Length: 252
Image (cartoon, rainbow, N blue to C red; front, top):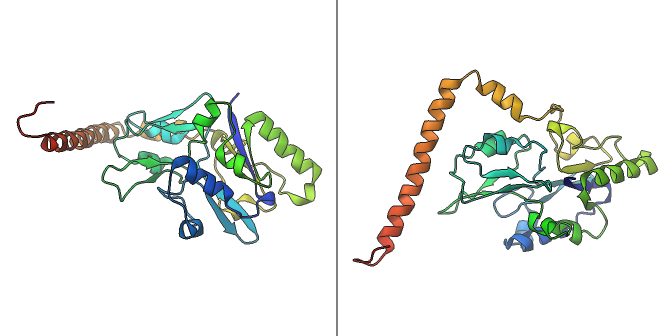
């Protein structure tokens, strides 16, 4: 069965141990200034946000049927059997369709890099492959973050609500939203107060995307040609730059 991560806002104390663990796992910088940032960025792939008297976490939702993967023209995004949605930078052509398509506005771009790529949480896919929990789960001191089999995470969330109905908003976010996600949320307040999108359809979004595109085949065709041109130009520049760096008279 696919894995998932459960975040229980009622247990989060805002210590940001999850942020620190994520930065260490990705070898990203982390200091007091970065800790204060409240938005996802190319150097911050999970964020603890202050929402009134509650804390929220922002990271990739790892949709069961991810729109980022459906719109990517080069297959840079893959939904794995274990659950995480992973990204292959070697395939990416920089079109950023994923950023526009994501209903949770998660993928970010390395605007300041000379060789930019998309950044997002991969739910510690390498750790999951080794049978380990996510780095943020391991670091969380309060049990606000758990990870494991998605059905088990749903059962745990329902158990917590049943045992303390007055302490929770009576719903689990992520069971059905956008067809279901690999990030499940519990809260004592309505989820929109934590900054989560509301009124998302319960069915996966990719079929809706393709239904719309089916009415504009000419635009889609032109877009494919243009994107192909961008891809060729990008890699042509890389090839020219590599050739210019080689000593004169030396052949690769």
